[in-house]
Length: 234
Ligand SMILES: [Zn+2]
Image (cartoon, rainbow, N blue to C red; front, side, top):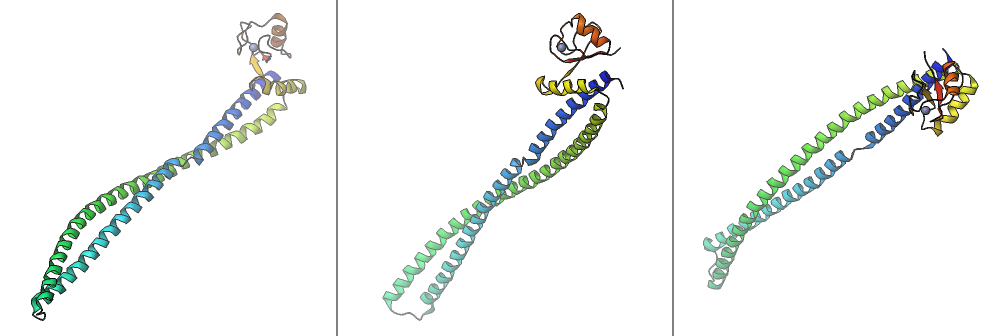
């Protein structure tokens, strides 16, 4: 391989490696990004807590209603059972039964509302749980795709790095030194092609006679405009 072909190929490899590195860093960030799932998990937890509280409120009312109903039945059988004869006691029992009936009616209303609230809270919690499961499946799917893409890029990057080692051996040390010196100083691009119309393919300037002739002769030459190493291909 002629050195100018080799240095041009090295530039291609290094440019690709830089792009791969950037992509890999983006993939790593994306792999860490699970905020959609976290939000769905938090929402599922909050709504399930609310549903559990609504279920408990309903149960408490059912229990209380049962207790009041049992007491009402006891008091009524006392009232009508004939065992109580004292007028004052009967009056008290009557008042108690009336109050228990009233309380029972209130509890029944409250229970109806609690049941409706419980059903609504349960439906909301179920919907949130569905969203959470979907977010989990979605994350698994996207992470699998990202991991596979990352593996492909790593393999490509390893192959290119190995090729770069080979290609470097075909470039004269003085050119290689210059290439490595220019890399960080010229935005990662040390090499520019001299076009047939004698302009630089990267900065577009018309290259002056001396570097132009040198580049065409396959010798070390630099662009007047952008200072890059000029290569010319017939
Ligand atoms: Zn240039």
